[in-house]
Length: 274
Image (cartoon, rainbow, N blue to C red; front, side, top):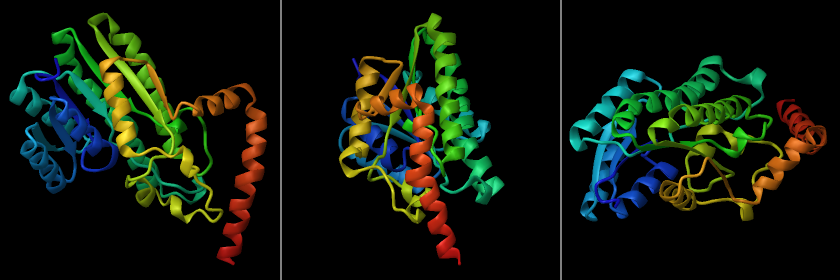
């Protein structure tokens, strides 16, 4: 039964995190909302409570272990257990690697996307091991399976999440703890595009509308995997063919991306600069 289960959702102040928190609350879960924007978290928590759900808002910076540890302890003190951790907090910067700021565009995304996932998982494990059950669901990205130009640092962080998820799954399964990784393609209705700067691409190449997901669709996939754990979930399913092509014929994909995107993007960038 979901009525007594507790889920922690990081990055819960908007987009996929908010949609996931609202969905699980509607299904009877007690939800811990974790993010840096406390005013936004409180507003969402109040909405959930007005709808008959249970929510705890905890301001959290996942890149700082002390902040993560404090959030986890508040959840345990409040509800005495942690059944699911959804590591969703993340952001990226779009641009050629040589133009990225070493701190703002490189170190900070890696700290949130990868270290944040590791820190949160590490912090909940003692409770889950004691319970002899639990489920850690990590938000990766299709870029955790496909290296993509202008997303080098974000891709590196998500490849890291992919490897971490696989290793952790094999490490903790003896305690009945499940680990899943979700790999969505482009998602609408999130703040990712605005924060990443992807709108600045001169070629305007992006995920086709018919392949784009909504935050609600991703949230529903998270809920499904929580009910029936799977190691890997690729969204939408047809992107599995793209991953297969990339793995089977990498040189062909390299040339295609070089000719269709990289050359054109760099040439158009030079024209604008001149």
